[in-house]
Image (cartoon, rainbow, N blue to C red; front, side):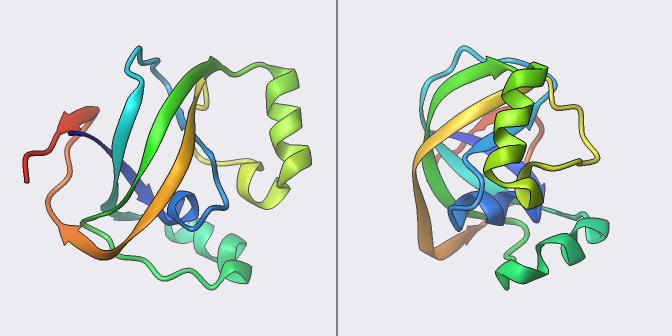
Length: 126
């Protein structure tokens, strides 16, 4: 099973249904089920921004899954559409947002799976 480690609060924003695109500096041809791993790193400077969502974080765990359906090269028009949809979530971040990975059928796990994350798209064998 493919897994993507995502820093907090971004991983939880995905799993809670607030964010359907994950941004990366690299593209992927992979399409299909992907596990969402909340990394150990929490971007503390972003926590205030999302305080209105009352999120609970579970760093260092697989917290859910989604279907990766597309990988889109981000341009100005695409970025504007996302900001118009939700400026709190899709507004300025600290990351290179070259590619938007489209996530659908997002499902939160009732029991997160504690595991150390890895860089890139990695494999998990339960």
